[in-house]
Image (cartoon, rainbow over all chains, first blue to last red; front, top):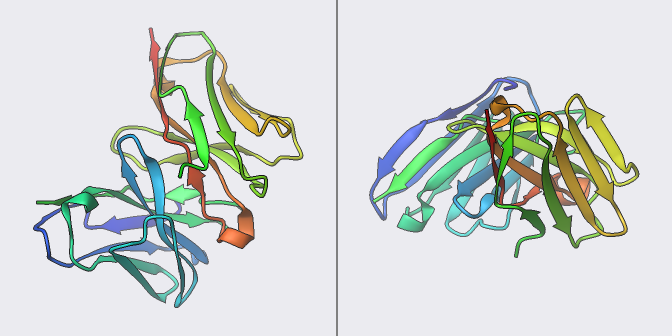
Length: 113
Length: 114
């Protein structure tokens, strides 16, 4: 699993509250990604990072922001959580010799009531 | 808009049989096509991948067949085992131009019966 951890692993929150999910890697990989997984949709890219302070949007970025102040940490923030953001969130990294996300974290199951 | 279309949505195969999952794409800028295996409660795991200059790649019981002119690629699992029961995702990326971000198919739930 290339030393990827996600926290928290489970979270229940209420509509309108801010939520921050953390992805931590121990391998110094440059590229990191946040995906959400929903039944019938597969995995969809939210945001990705190609270095410290370098980030870009994915196809479902509305309502989400990210930050990467250190190589090892990539944070995903739901600015004001909505029920449509109930999902399983996966962090992923691209290995140096790979051409796409090579390792995925264990996921965070988020429920917005 | 789904850039990678995957079929079937679900598949039941008997032990020892061949499982075949198909994917199609439109964007000719895609240059890397991986497959992922996901067990319940776990993150996806990279299974096998191919580039468009190769028509077939085999790793153990898993084979990717790639048809560039048809813009299709498929995963074949030979001698399928109950332990192969999982959800499989195909994906594609434009590489550096898109930050190596992956576009995923919607997934295929495979059940291998004893």
